[in-house]
Image (tube, rainbow over all chains, first blue to last red; front, side, top):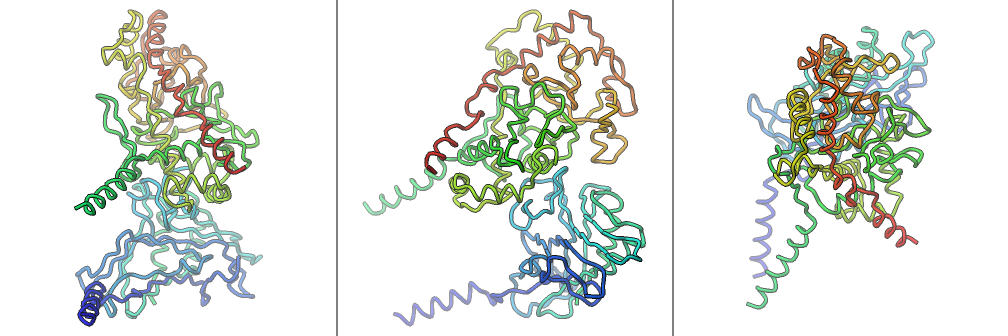
Length: 229
Length: 345
């Protein structure tokens, strides 16, 4: 009888896990400036002893993660909202609860938060307003926030505060991103901050603190600076 | 058999106990459906009481002096009586008059410029504004977490003493949603329980002819944005909803306020420029400033004689709901604070 129960519970376990990888598929975000990956080691993220850029805040919302194989949707994450905050290393990756060796080609996600959630009620977890990513003077989330300074005396731009948000047409700064994935053991999403800041400098934009055309344009530029490793 | 009955009784008791704290949101007869999505934040007695405590507690402000009630007093229909512009921490003066907090479950947007689309998120604005509470929701949560009274209140409300921004804001919403005013003389007249005087009846007719397209019954607002022809204040230079939308079509448009309890909620308009109802009516008859976005209903001045203005004001006074302004359930929660503080001692 004991053996029967043992086999019964083993069978239940196998059915329940359904071959799922108990650890899931890791999705990590890396913010890079040049060759340096930003991390939470310092309060002000110095790129290097020689570089003059220092980052005080780097935060970004990615949402609605979907895995595709060709035109077929393989997996769609529910309640899919993730805040990546360089100052907190625990936020820089998460796991999709999918089976091991899942066959997929590319990943789809949104840079930002959808309009329904933006105009909806209070939410918790990564969407909690205590995360400092919700405008207080009007409805809506800040999709991407960067505060940085440049101590180079020759530089035209001494500081950057780019708070990119907006959800209501024509100021909707949500961007849909689709990226091919080669390494299926884990997905690394790389955000090239140096490229993004150079684009902003080229447009003479160093401060964006509200929704508008500048925020929309920069959100398109930011999306172009995101790739997979 | 006895065991089965005992089990059924225990399970039923559990569900009954759980459901006992739930509160139904009562919609007054013939009123429209509320806009607020209660399924995402169902009313609960403990959450309402938590929200009420938060509403009256200056712990929300950076200097521990300003509470929501500082600018939204129950006796003046939850507005800041006798102040054209609200003031906050360190005696800072704001840029707008505090709106009355009445029948919020039916409102589509919040703030005079309609900037906030959901009631849950409205409290973030005064909490964070440097001239109001001068704090942040993150700091508020940290302060609340230091107080045993709040850890207990949050536990009672959410079965979990962990305090978050979401729970804090939703609890405040719950209290605000209970602020329903629907028992004025007007309401009793509509229900056939009371009669208007001849003056009030005449005023009601004039109101329906001239005012009700924007101040629509029974809420006495459409909650839409409108330019009601006010001259721009040269110091405040408030452009209304355009500040948020950046759409020139929204220039000088402000949210149409409810007229319920208007007797108690002076001064009037988004910047509190009118102290008396007669000033308001004089504006509509002789003071309209024309601009591209002026509400079409005000294209021609409203025609009212002096006597007719008095009649309209008589009608407006029938919108006063004493039960609402003196409801002890809406006032400072002495029991909550006194009992809890006694326990802490």
